[in-house]
Image 1 (tube, rainbow, N blue to C red):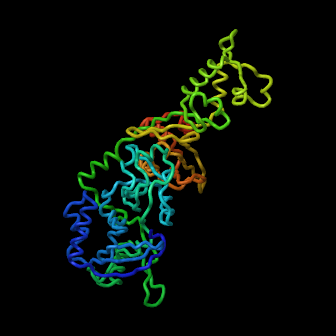
Image 2: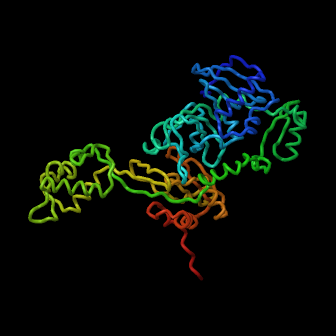
Image 3: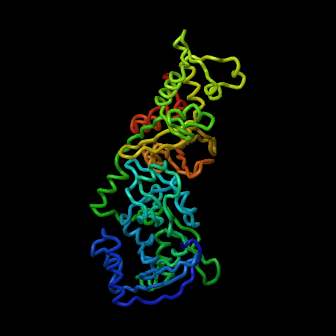
Length: 460
């Protein structure tokens, strides 16, 4: 909504009666807000303005600005919090998580598609279609967007996390954000900007130089300074902390992964007698039952040898190569079933504890561990595809950094859309093996690259 510049129609100070009405509207729109929280959000004495504007699509929007900071906006008589408000009250709305790479698309005006969601081990928040939701990024609980659910949580899972999940109304860094709070030096204890900058330089947080006569410029910022890195969003209240621990911070449990098979167009005639059509998803046992019943119903079991199945035209078209069409007339049961499974399209079902199963086409990508050379011939360990197993790359990187006592970075995975990779200094495959197999209890068959672990040195 605010992805492009808007036109301001009016900007007026709020009246006392309108201020009281706004408090009542906030309390009605957000029942979890207590009286003290409503009073803090809509204070009695601070400057509060009503800004009426036209969005780039022509929508008439009312924005409530407190002390220069947009706190709420109203569209079609519905009240919405801004990201500024959600930073102070991060548990106000049910929060869904996506990857940092997605934020740029949201700021550009895109809606959040379900493939971009990160499913935590405890499952997605329960919402209904039309519910107001917050969107946060992996590794940071501060919401970066406000949107409306395009479908319920149950419908999201039933769809296999495909399609549009949320209509995004407002994001961090959109055109509403520049209307936000600015530091008013005159109202601070410094009174003058030069005094403030001088103090920040003495604290070694910034470096200031006079690049032109009479003009001081900030030429460097120490983003690792303790005063900056220690800045965090206030922890939630005891009530919301219980929810937080119960959703995002509970112990990891691996998903149950089951291979499935999709019926392609070339095999629909073989499966239509059992009530299945193109795109139907089946388990391996179901495929076996269907093939056995088809052979018996059509009298294809060899009378002289029960281990052989005669091939009718439908079976020939489905499982034989072109050069076999006139030479192969019978097949053993195991060969027949193997060929059928090979010609079906692969799929898989992922079920996280306490969640509905999610079905996806194709084969699940294993967690990929590789070694790479970097500058000065130094080795690094690179881990990809953690997201498919419900693992947060940022959290895995933090654990590895502590265990390996080595630097870690999280970067976009090359060639993979909306996916991240973890890079650890040195050959750390032994630590990864212990973390993934012993701590997270992931099956070894879903991890590739463990054989690249350094071999133990021979004792002299």
